[in-house]
Amino acid sequence: MSSSEPPENKVQSVSIPATVSRILQDGSIALVATLLEAAANASPNIGTKLLVDGSEGLTVGSLGSEALDNAIVEYAAAFLESKAETRVFRVQEFAPALTEWSEAQILFERIQPEPRLVICGAGHVGASLAKLASLMGYRATLIDDRAEFVTREYFPDRRIELVAAASWSEAVQAAVGNGHGVAVAIVTRGHSEDEQCLRAAMRVDADYVGLIGSKRRTNIVLQRLRENGADEGRLARVRAPVGLDIGAVTPEEVALAIMAEIVAVRRAGKGGSLSEWRRS
Image (cartoon, rainbow, N blue to C red):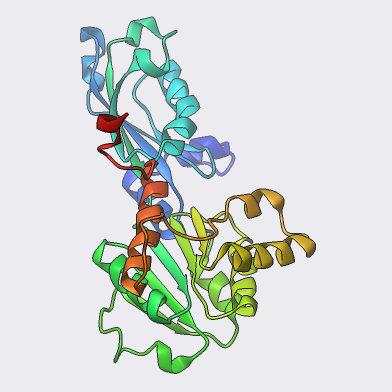
């Protein structure tokens, strides 16, 4: 391949499996579209795939039609924003102008790393949260500045990564990475620790950031960050107090409330009662 080829041609020459592998390693996100059914004259293209990198907007592969590929690229952001894992579309649903493809069926699949939860604070709530997250298929990282709180004696589950932090800020930044597919739950023992963790977590756009505490305590932390120039948009997205209102009292119940909200955000759930429709 000539080194003078434009970048887009180089991307096209890479295989979809290799690109998926890179995306997962980078902690990024992508869409893979597969043509399932089309008009008779397009049947040779059945099974062809197009990958759209959600971070860089680059593509790999093709469904055999430039117009169809472009329509999928244009719709990719909306699909990824919907939080759906998979869905089969007819082309008329997202690109009604492509009348020759209107009845074609395309499988959309979301490609992203396994979900991760970074927990700041290994007290009773943090410990319960790490164990519950692992049970639910999340890769958990449990951070505390007290080394005796993060030992394998207490957490034999190897899916839970344990970090004894010399610096809260550095430990949180290292654990959160670029924030893609990452939820952060801040459940430390005090205002200072909360502030350090939240400031570090807000340096990237993590999928979810939650802060435990009363309305008064969380408002104090948020106001301190605001006074120090924190981005208002990111402050507004912090879930504080953290979790859904299920009347939680015990550490295990609080952990359940937090995980319920994390799942609701990840799956675009409303967090209400499924039976509410009967009463309304």
